[in-house]
Amino acid sequence: KKILEAKVAERTAELAQKNKDITSSIQYAKRIQEATLPPRELIQKHFADSFILYKPKDIVSGDFYWFGEKGGRKIIAAVDCTGHGVPGAFMSMIGHNLMHQIVIENGIIEPAAILNTLNSGVQNALKQGTHEIETTDGMDVSLCSIDFEKKEIQFAGAYRPLIVVSKGKMEKTDGNKFPIGGTQMDNERIFTNHTKFYEKEDCIYMFTDGYADQFGGEKGKKFMIKRMYEILLSITELPMKEQGKRLNTAIEEWKSSYQQVDDILVIGIRL
Image (cartoon, rainbow, N blue to C red; front, side, top):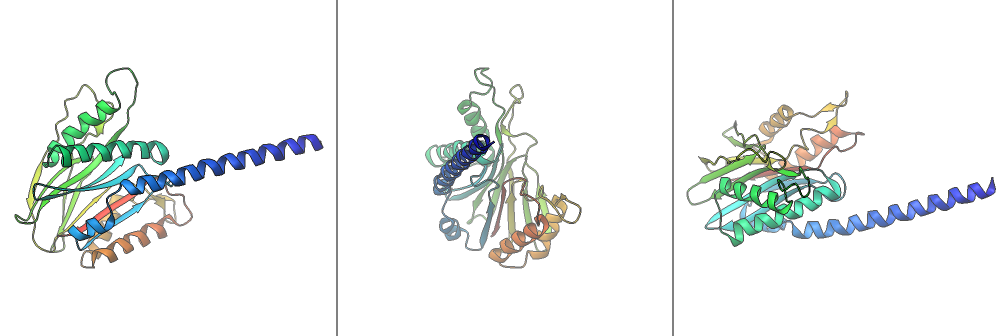
């Protein structure tokens, strides 16, 4: 019996050590992932009244935000990669690098064209459709290209919408109903470009599905997108930083003792 107890204790210690090693390795990976994200100060510099609510589920995240400037336009995206944790983080690094190549190096600034190119890039990077390796991984994206001079927003989305709140009224522009990458190899996917003009003080919101999909409340149900929109409408007059705090408080109170089910990313900008 003593030998058995000793073996159990030894195995438990081994597992604890392995767990510690894996966790510290992922903690370090988090530093690398955060270093690739655009600095908040940079986004603040271009969008003075803005917030980013970014809550990874498992240390590293499959959600990421991207920002770049090209051809007099500010380009910002909220991206949700398949999975979360380590696999999601690998996908986010691929997405981040492709976005940089497409916009900064190749100078593509129309949102639909960015997504079309990103789609090919993800398929090539993951050898999708070659039958060498079967991966169905992809990304959902909400992407805006903003011209301050013309007061113009161009938008394209892969499953994700753009929300504009103007004078207390909410307008939703849906993205296309297909992802970046993934399985649908036989379908020719061409993303749609939407152009709209904004007025000063209009607010725009881009987000992944993690916020609305969070379980909680008294009955352990999903938060739901309708409730999220109601909150956005009720806080739209507040400074953006305060809006971010309110959204965070709302989801934390809803979640309560439930586990976070997915990465959460919400971007809000007052134009």
